[in-house]
Image 1 (tube, one colour):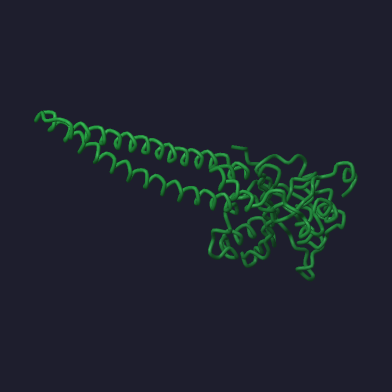
Image 2 (cartoon, helix red, strand yellow; image 1 turned 90 degrees about the vertical axis):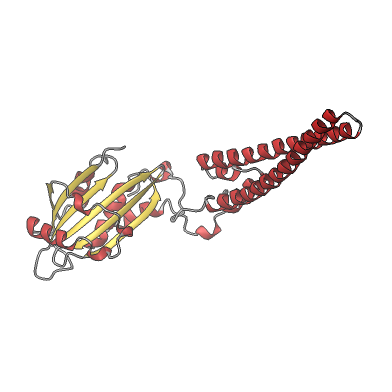
Length: 303
């Protein structure tokens, strides 16, 4: 598990549009799942008109807002207490989580006077060059109305301007069709290796069950016919009893294995179809923001 990097910043604003005749103050809390070098010093440079002071972290604001019934008021009392303790008017809480080549940024903007959540930003983007700092700059810049065109331009440089014209190489339908041909192929195509192995293993076991049951069914039928023939060709009472008993056993077995074949075929067919549907559900879909690969040559000097 990665070590959490939590930085708290006390931001004292010299000008802000929310208050008239008063200089509002802000507490900025940054909660990251990995170390982002010099993030605090860069914020100081990019917002040089503000004064920063560092404080200890506040973990109470870390939570899943999407799972809360009323996120606007979920920490009202705590936010008010922080406002009194740090003598600030607003709180900006920023959280960043990285997922392979992408990252998630959630920003929350609170008023310490009411304790309520005033604004929230939640984005999912490609992990482009200096992306964390650039997105924090844009978020904080929007709040204090001090944004720069270069920040927005830097993000737009990785976004397709007309995503409707993009042809996706991988689609849920292609995933479903692959699994319809070979169980687990669609999941493997979508990068779901565990699911692919589970479906392939399950269907293989069911098919093996069909083959074994067919073999046993065929063996029981042949044995039944053999004992039936022997039963009809003997006059010995002991042999008659023996051949009759064996014929009855194999007759019951042929019915049993016939039913097993039907059950295994039904389970295999249902599983095969379910496997294809599951492949469509977990199939590759475009991300919320359609992005290009970062072009170091063209963007190294931007922003």
